[in-house]
Length: 240
Image (cartoon, rainbow, N blue to C red; front, side):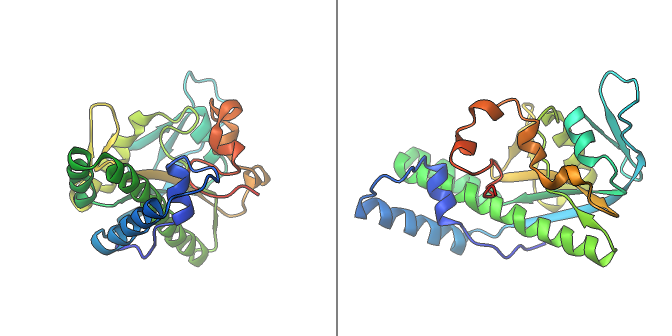
């Protein structure tokens, strides 16, 4: 699924560590040029699939690792964070987005030739893939609305205690290796690096606990997170 989205300049600056300091005209021009090149050359792509919850997470269940089973996916989501995030969900959406191999090739080329340009390009691509994830999440929201349901926010492997080890299962279930060209490395990170997998819950009625950002609430870095101090969260959405 081609995703219509744009690089967020302010997010690009955030990824570069910008905190209001004055930028030189040369750097401003370089940033704008890189953003323009990203939007011209890269084609964000993504897909999602929705599965019923076959074994709901039970807060009273005695199990070493909380688990939630998805019907028809041959997949189990593990971890207290993801089970709490999806508690009460009728269905679960798995999603994956990527900027594709070209972004990876250009990052490697620039890293060898122009480290500063590579740094800016990396930041712009990070902003771009987050925008792509937002665009795909909007598609899930529209799907849920058409089914008379509502969604909570996306939750990715690595949030809270939802392990990166979940990435191979998500990629395999979505066939994202074939359909998007994703590879899961032995470290459970994705290649191309500018790729994201996520999970969303679909609910008849959204539980009140989802009014706050659970990804932050359950994160071990919450107390020291520099992003939260600047009023943003790691998936790029401004906190209210």
